[in-house]
Image 1 (cartoon, rainbow over the protein chains, first blue to last red):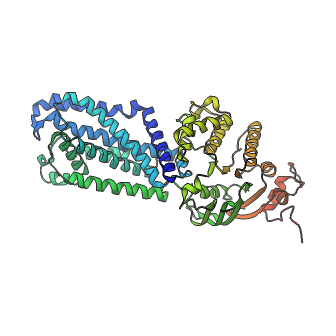
Image 2: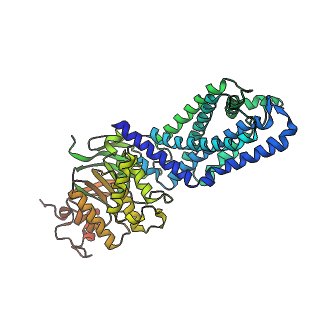
Image 3: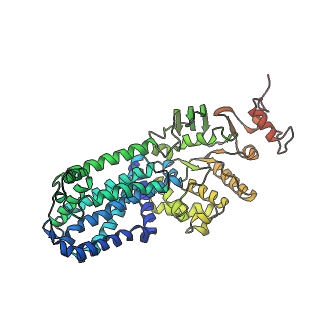
Length: 257
Length: 257
């Protein structure tokens, strides 16, 4: 009986959060598609033709996996951050706290919604970008795994931001000054071994390198940075981030006085 | 089976800044009772309600709802409780029916049942013609009715209300009183905080009085204020007698040795 009650509560939270981002789908989903399309057009075609092949692929094909992931992780992150911060700000987080919902269920509900938004945005970018490339998806299973795990990791990370944010400014600071540089410098546009020392080594500390590399392997059958590291590091970091989010919500940090 | 709907023992809470909000409160509310919670601003009424409903972190003491610890067994304890908070705490950008339906699912109702109950409770509080509207356009009284509907959607056995009639006009207040009396007659246990002394006298079977985080009295309204207490401001007025009680006077109806 408890399992049914918890399942209904989880469904309620996911439905609420999905409705929330779909209500403003133009604002929530389209910007990623527009940005990725512009990147594909400018760097993939106009400039990319002069750059020739990279990592054994046309430049447009080379950058596409990174652009899809860019949409996945930024949407997952922003969704969790804004949804959780909004719930704190308007105090409707209390609707969950008074209900028989354990902390892990609240975290799971927000994270699921973030994953769904991230995957929706990624799928839209893929849909728009595929006709501009000659890409064939080589390893669908591992591609899905990397996309889902990345979305989950950044949903959890967004939740941490949503827990600690004190103002709307705080909800964009991490995304702007940390997340975006990590993504841009994470091998989306170039193989990191092309960087001069010590930047090639420094880049290995960027988790996005492994995520992009794993996804590129899935789509192009080409990986340059970590090979199997993606499938080792990504689940581990995701689990740790999720546990931290659960611990903070269970302790009521920034939620309960 | 515990005969008490609420059992509180040794509740302590100190907020940041060091001022104790509650300093060792014990309280027991039997099933089926209509119990009032009275006290001046800052007496600890909302903290007490927050501790019972999971909105405030418990520092010391124990809370049992129908014999269950809400932290250890949230499904058994919280599922039977509905809360009408003092301040508005719903998402103002979400349609009214979705607010109620989601809350029902948070309490474990399946989606179809949640929709049925949403229709029923919105009709009961007179908001049936506004179901798809967003609540930011509602009057203060309508917002209170919406919170009441949300608290009733899962048919709780215990309804906790934190100043539910504050700011309501006379007609809305009387409608709320009628609804609460109807619920109590049907077997719902009610714990209600209020600053309206007439409300306490006319509705509650017993009233707990808090002052500076301590329970200073817990008795029937007749014994606290005297059976002859009226609405005026003279010696027999409720306000006068309440102030006398706060200043350490004997309850008016108490037998003198």
